[in-house]
Image 1 (cartoon, rainbow over the protein chains, first blue to last red):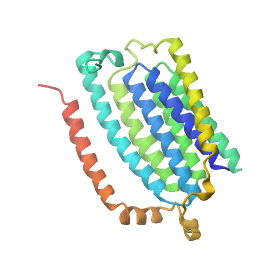
Image 2: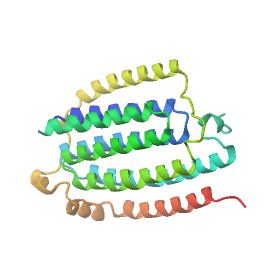
Image 3: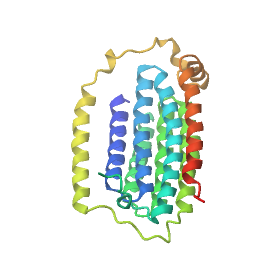
Length: 99
Length: 168
């Protein structure tokens, strides 16, 4: 197996996640797509770690997962707060800070 | 065998990721993302990284996605009105942009010369992804970042409590 296969899979997953972030209207769906992008990056880290025979890539994936856990918790708390103040999960309803 | 497994897991991950996009209900998107993450865990096993594969299932597909599902159920998605995605024309434009991005990335990836990249001495090959080796590297070279993640998580816990608390 060449490393190119893994990198292309990673690029495809990242693109799908980016398209989702741009197109989805539900806040939680946008979050899910961000998680997808993080995982795509993790995949290329692990692939490089395997093919370069260096364990540092896996350590970075570990840290990415820790940060993703913290980010998901804070993001979901913000989602709950937005839902409480606006009774809506539409990202277009939370546009006070847009300009 | 290895390439068969890779294509199986890659296809599963890609289909599940596309399903995350096209599902209207967030709940089904979340379930689909769990499938995608589990397939990625299989790919990590192919790449000889059992530790990463294990915490992918335990932390990502387990803890983080359960947190997502808790919040989705808390906000009661089944009685809410469905949010339509943004305009169809915009969707086609986004897919087109994505294809252009993939094409550009493909050139970049193909021109990358893996053979000349720096690599560790080959002596470590056997135990590269083992928990023991990862633990040794983590607690020797990356001790300070490791300790700082604990502060990060503490800050995140406090922030979540402050953010989600009901104002009285």
